Length: 160
Image (cartoon, rainbow, N blue to C red; front, side):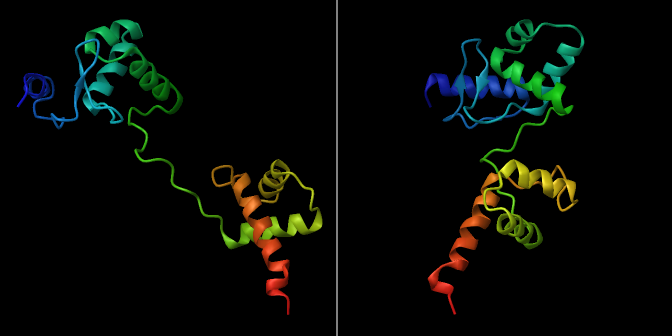
């Protein structure tokens, strides 16, 4: 085991009480703190950042004290102020939302009635008519998908 790997493991045990990081992936930042690129900070560190900020400490001071990058501290505090949560965002990208058949058929009806309708107009109508809520309103891609499926349906392949 190389010295820096050993040091990372020892520091992890001292700071967090156990070998939190796989020593082959962890690195030491410019402030001397341990991190694993792309992985969230432990909940205890995130909580400490918020507590220090609420007690009046500046983000740059928190950064130096906890040996966490200033950008990371800023992101955590910004997310806390926006959502009230200290939990990290999900790892691995976004999960696509699937539109219901009722929504897709409503979009297709809008497109048949007015082929040049804009996506924002479709979303407005879906909200106004109570078909969707602001939390589950489809994106532009659903409108495009319904248009392409409508075009496929109207093509000669499906002609009877």
